[in-house]
Image (tube, rainbow, N blue to C red; front, side, top):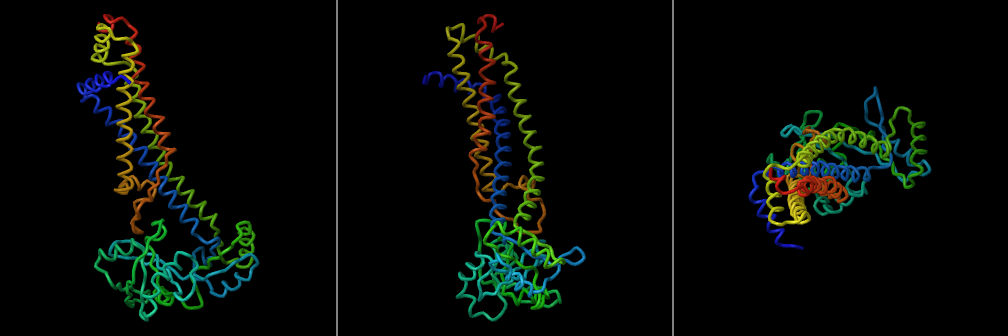
Length: 392
């Protein structure tokens, strides 16, 4: 490696710093947009994957007039007798509107003396067993997002729920929990099932829905058909149905991302075309002077290669680093709304750090080598012409 050529290139860049800064800014901005959107996309896809995997195989909902209503608890016992069903749990849960911050909390009723329908909830019950065994009054264990929101509104130890009958239900805050997927648990409140029934005015003979656990994935569709026959007034939703629904929503949101991607690439190729269409008078004069003092064509191409490499690599890593900081430290304000929406109906969640190296390599290949070629090719065209003609 010829360090003198590198030194000459650095000094040449320093002389034209103002002009090159605009190129670096545009290049970095394009990389920043691409990496940011791909990172947000990868993170939310990971969130959805974790959420879907935690879902029960089948959910049974009773419908009335096209809307979900409470379902008789006895149906859980009937469903549990179907061959291939491991267990069926009646769930009591609902959305509670927290007017202070204009969000909805998901309140889930559990029997703290039994195993929950979800392993995560069973682990939380065991974690707080000592703190909850001696409590006879209403209490709750809340997701980290709910805990922070209540604390910000000065509810540190207790919160007063307003039931559907208008009465106040003073509830002690025992603790909080979190999970890998904040999207799944961030807005959740776990309470003893009898207090959730009181909160939403659901009698002991009814539940919100029934979840069905099926150990053999190949039997899910068969059991789904049986349930449709047994309960024609119910909607039977499988995990695959929910996954397909999530994917449709995500694909729709990705259309907005595709528009942004096209705009970014058009801007980049305009930048490349501007470089490839010809050198400035100052650049051509510099090449002519170098040829006049005895520089060879390969030497000129080397400094232009070094120049293009330095600018493109610096811009790429600057854009990538800024994008990762923006997405995973600042949590991508504004851009994340392309995928999650701007609604405040649920507490905000943190994006899971997911670095997709395949995408980073693809962006690198589509930007850095292209820019280097756009720098070297015009220089080669000028360097093969006689020095006096170049300077004219």
